[in-house]
Amino acid sequence: IINCPLHGNCFIECLGEHSCQNTVIDASSSEGSLDLICGSMGDENDGDENCHSVIVYGSTNTNKLNTSDDDTRSFNVLCSDNHRSCMAAQFHCSVHSQCSIACNGFESCSYADVIGTSLDSMQVYCNDDRSCFHSQIHAVT
Image 1: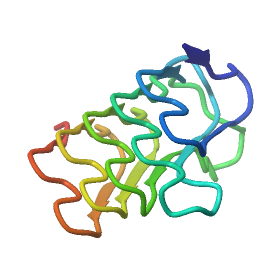
Image 2: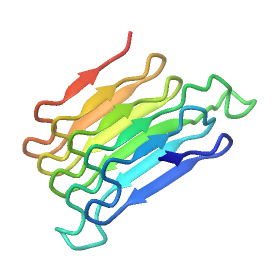
Image 3: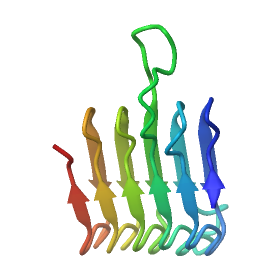
């Protein structure tokens, strides 16, 4: 399990084959942004299934990041060009921030579950063959 900090941002890179497979990333108490990159270190086959079956919990914290009106908290996931990089993953978007998930490889987010945010925007990009095959994407209302 990776617990993100309460104050500040959480940046995680999973760059090798199976590097974060079955990992739980918990940012549920965080006041900052969460960025997860599931990719490779250059070799096209380097990062296959690097975030396979990962479970990511975005923030449910209702505190503002700062006192200004510019609360730039975000939840960003990049499932790179590698095969099945985020296959069977579960993404629980942060409640009070934008949510962006990019599935850029063959079957990169196939069989994934995305639970959207209730108070901000959500974008899911399915940018390759079968990249979101059999996935479930739920916008929370």
